[in-house]
Image (tube, rainbow, N blue to C red; front, side):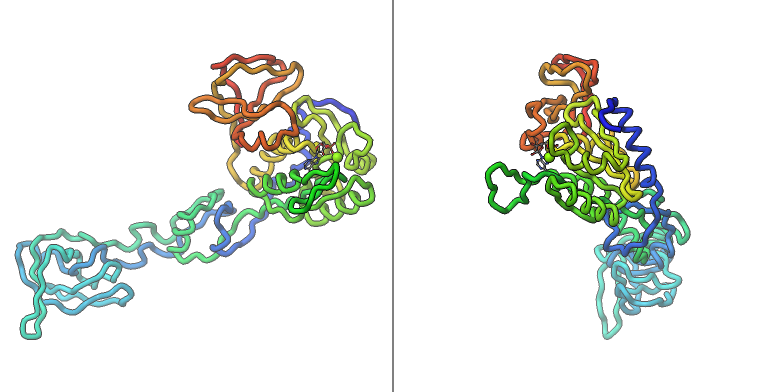
Length: 399
Ligand code: AMP
Ligand code: MG
């Protein structure tokens, strides 16, 4: 189908159906060092008690509380326990010097901090005088008091941050099952495009959609497996889309979908069952979808703001859901100034949070990508709204 008209909601639904296969993610095991920012596919149960053994919370003296019930009291010292030492046995009425993390001797039940003692060595006999009583359990970290072996440490769906890595490492977990990342390929089209770092020839522009769509995919939990560019040449594009479909689960293209003479994406994918439609939104009106060798393709328009707005509206929610990341919900913010919007199209303005409100930061042109870089929200103005006043609440989609 070519030339159809759709509402944004209809196209969202259409794309969701096309990308339905992304929703069932297999689990893959990754080493802990690669687990940051991944999403757990299964709950993790503690394989051991944490702490794994009773140990001292202080540098001090391991005692039995009964021996220090009346103070001051002087006790013989039976050696020193360092962190990393093995088990030992306590003799009632004695003390053992103990370091933080060292195992509490069997039979001892409290630690007197070194600050509450004086030690002396008299004729080869070491003693410690305790100035303050401690109850049983004082400064003892009991085995399993943080988490018991078998208890759930982290739930399925947990987005792994540094603190989760800490907990996993602490119980000796070295690899975790995480959701496989959706594999994305990006193809930008346009014979005018050159890659940054080279000189711009006459009529040429630097390719910004390729890097932008790749970064957008990465930022939303995807693995970008291919980033390519095609001139407006049907044969070249056909070869590149076939390659992209062979390595990715979803392909995003930019450019070549509107009403010009050189619409390579539409020309190649249209005859192969692709649908090229006009969505009632601005920017981002011309949109295409196709399936190439079983792989869904979202064909976004080439204007840089249109390409990014298209990604945010149609691809971001689905990629995040596939990756197990939480949705990014719109918020209602008051406008700092009046706003007018064209009738009949849902318009997306580039806005920036400004105190408690939001300010439009760029003109309406969909080529204004430097302007968009100053935005942190898209203002989503309904098709039938033509004007809003300063102070009116507007729907703002965080970028
Ligand atoms: P198109 O949708 O191919 O007609 O492109 C619309 C406008 O976006 C034109 O001004 C293109 O030069 C520009 N454009 C297309 N692709 C890119 C890209 N990858 N990076 C920057 N600008 C682009
Ligand atoms: Mg083009």
